[in-house]
Length: 400
Ligand SMILES: *Cc1c(COP(=O)(O)O)cnc(C)c1O
Figure 1: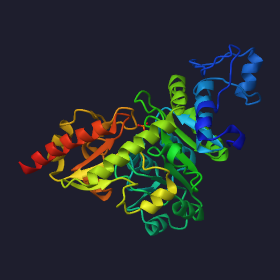
Figure 2: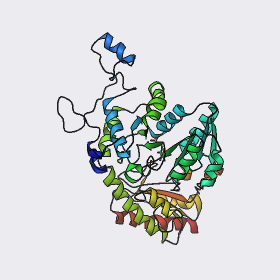
Figure 3: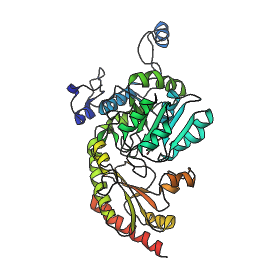
Figure 4: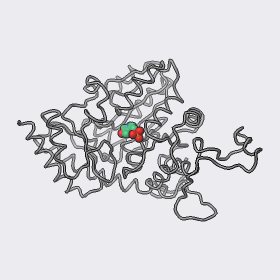
């Protein structure tokens, strides 16, 4: 747990987790090595027998990966953190560690496409009972969870609908049923929201998004209590193998140094673009947690310190209009990633959420006219000018 003496968020972001080698380097060292040497056969045996602490092999532990884990744990004010090779690997590892055949896993209908697939097509196949909650209402979660469950899982805000869930209320439902609550905190990151503080047991990250923030490496992480992460999840990571690469860990640990200022700048830009989009007659719907008309504005303000860098909106004319609109961009990159310094744009129904069937997509509120944008670090005025071009192209398509 980060102590008060370790400073505020901004200070921890640049200092937490750093140790120094005999070279006394200023920047964090990168231990790009797959294994570690032992002084003797006896020491090797002692390490394998868990009689002596120390590194063995980078699938188990690596000092640069540990640096990233400790820095992220400090930012989330978490007891511990485990890093994985991607966000999906983090989700898989958590479920492998917590659930077994016959477990009840209750999840939101608004999940990242691959997450939905992993639950419905894989964990269900191995006998995990997967229950999908149709909406974000607390009563629906209570009903779906019942009196006994093992794991509840949600994304808040969700990608791409940006629906905000009441984490404290759902944590309470989980705990009454003897379950743990895991929250996918990809979109806010610890810089804008701390799910553990709100009552969740595990916060999950796709480090690929805002934690990297420059579109370079894949990574994932889980934060929470050591008792859950070390004792239940780590044994799977060690033998299952989705370890984070030391190079990616180094990149990500350095990225955490600038997380706060990046996400604050991106949020400010997204907030202004969302506001502008709500005033455009051709836009039928805007999703942004901090926009004035947002259904759960009070809840969003209670849980998050800013709205985040993502905005989704719908235009009339379905997929043809959305495609024409996206193709008109001159400033956004057409790519599935988000949280990058470069603004990005995508059509969720045909990309990130195309592998879930049309009915599940409709239930999750993703229509064919929906476009998702991720604010980058560009001048907001340049992005807004491009959005004018995008909307005009979409409208032309709708008219023809
Ligand atoms: C991208 C994403 C993931 C998956 O992360 P990867 O790093 O791509 O494996 C999970 N959840 C959300 C909300 C995401 O946006």
